Amino acid sequence: MKAHIKKIVIHTKKRKEIVNITQRVREAIDKSGIKEGIVLVNSMHITSSVFINDEEDGLKRDFMEWLERLAPEGDYEHHAAGEDNADAHLKRTLMGREVVIAITEGKLDFGPWEQIFYGEFDGQRDKRVLIKVIGE
Ligand code: ZN
Image (cartoon, rainbow, N blue to C red; front, side, top):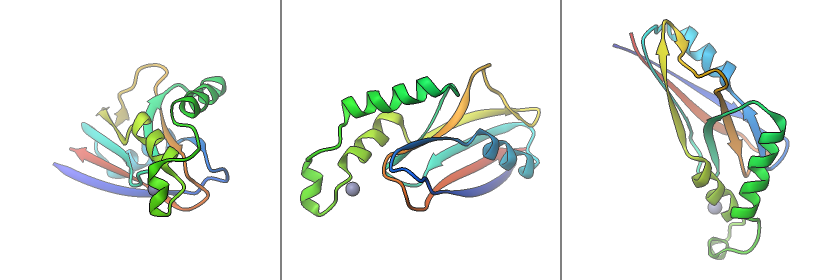
């Protein structure tokens, strides 16, 4: 069994943004040389997410609008600790920390519309995403 790790840095211009990272995951799989196995992709921060869905601009706006309704910016108990980003922590938990995808014949074994996204909810600074490829 082999293992290959890649950490990528994402620095969004906006505080909240959805970034398609599918190609960067494909590059890590290619570099690993692993043909059969799994890839784990996770945000290393508690105010951003990694999730799988469709590359469609309207849907990405829908996700952000839905998250804003569930976890609006505003006052939270967390802010008594001197922070201002409780909404981002809540959004991260709603959208999830990581995804795991099968690798078959050296490729992401995806359904027809699946893409990997990084969801940033408190950005405008360097954030890291871990890509770990395991297999042979
Ligand atoms: Zn916080």
